[in-house]
Length: 455
Ligand code: TYD
Ligand code: MG
Image 1: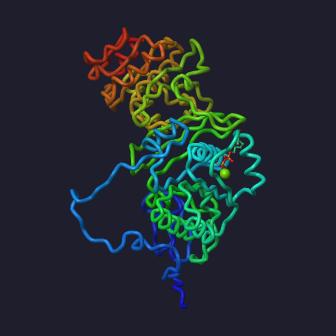
Image 2 (image 1 turned 60 degrees about the horizontal axis):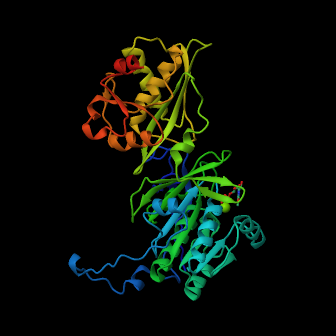
Image 3 (image 1 turned 180 degrees about the vertical axis):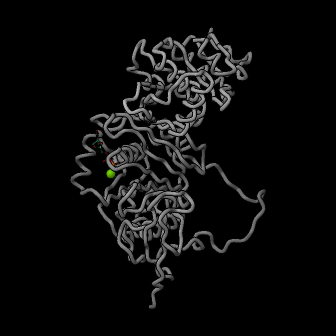
């Protein structure tokens, strides 16, 4: 058989395909992200083609489609169920990404244990660990019962035929970068292999109504293909975030065809596995300093959930004329912009100061509602005055120093009231009668001058 030898290039960050190599990706602008991959030989052998489970498609009208709501499997974690959109849908493909060592295998093993316990037939395929290692991990998590079996295999054809013979209801592929199919002519972990393997799994799983969890390592560099290229192929994408060295982990739903995306679940890594944290706001605020300048509490929306967190800022005189700016957890450019607004509108000189902004808890936040808290934290550190402990602050700050309204003010105020805050500083335009929750003192501000006066 003559093989097509044409070389194609992929951006390993966003999956953009090109016939020419380029120093940076024209779509996601990532530098040096192009990797070479020989195109897969044309003509598939084996596997179920999409047509074989849809027997010759004909167009139908919407009213003729009967779609009974399939019963979802419950993963045993209410938080994970919420991120998945109310449980795991039979036949759906879930990609779980994250840095190595963050806890993907642990989470999925726990999910398998719970699913098997509630009566599902589960197959856990590991291409990374031996059966002995799996056993050691499983022993830490507790007792396993029900119909669950383990397989150490990297040959995808063997896994696909097992899926057809055994017909498990749920299967875990850990990880996709270790899987190999002879149908793609490159090494395991390459873009072509990862895409081809996912495609074959997808076709077989959809045909047999098997739910699949695919583990993918996120790699910023190196030769292994990142899971970004798979995002468009799967139904749901979950990413594990958080500091590997701290104990909490945040699981974020980045894409969900069967539920809201952007939901998060917070877990804590214990010696006996991951434990969900049902009240993350309280968790995020634990250990905050008392009466310290530069610390302000704000509220961001993560999906449908309000989350309180602490914004910390530190301003010090720079030793080198030109001040440095550092942002951890917040957008760097946003911090630079807010510093400029602060300098212009409040007539303070910051250009010769070093400024550091940190969102505690290891979260990465993009919610503009955090602006006002960052401004107040910076100002508080600069003037060395403290913001009272029971004050929560939110609002977007514009270039003119105006404080603009943000969506879901009521949810934010309610969350603050629930955690014992007594005062809220918020955009004047967000004030409304329905906000008056449980004796909370609401202070509406129109611009940052008013905000600093209030404090
Ligand atoms: P793991 O699930 O192997 O990460 P990944 O599959 O994403 O690479 O998690 C590995 C880390 O978690 C490892 O450093 C050990 C730690 N861990 C615990 O702290 N408690 C536990 O019960 C388990 C199983 C792992
Ligand atoms: Mg693992």
